[in-house]
Amino acid sequence: MAAWGLAFPHWMPAAWYQKHGYVEVDRREVDVLVWKPFSKVAAAPRWMRPRKAPDVTPGKVTVTAFVNGWCPSACEVSEVARRVAAEFGDRVVLQEIDTSEREVLLEWGIENALFIDGECINAGVTDYPPPGYEDIKERIQRRLEKGGYRL
Image 1: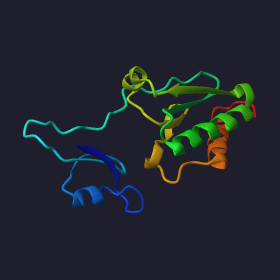
Image 2 (image 1 turned 90 degrees about the horizontal axis):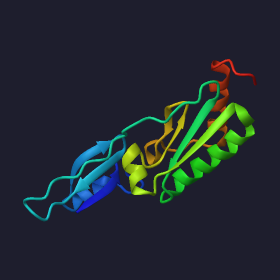
Image 3 (image 1 turned 45 degrees about the horizontal axis):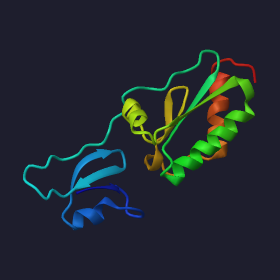
Image 4 (image 1 turned 180 degrees about the vertical axis):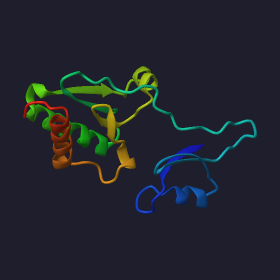
């Protein structure tokens, strides 16, 4: 039996599972994967790791949102990124990748995340609190200025 917990105590603490006999088998920043084997031949699970990075569009800022629909926080970040990207018009390219399909998830190895020009700025609860409207807008603005794009 495997469970996902967090390394901090205020929501879904991994420590709760550990008090009930689960052991930590993998960690991805604050995400803790715990498990409790019920068979001697069972193999411990591991977190999926990213398999490839999102493409970047030359001459534009590229915003890539990975979302699978089950995490309200990731859905909100994706929606905010969509609104902000639209404000910059054709200077920003938005790529939305639906990872609710198993094949897509396995292709990328990324469940929920937001990238700006290939740099991950939010990976679900790993980045708490998630970036809001002003933060995403400021990051895109900085990338536009750094790239010498017309503002």
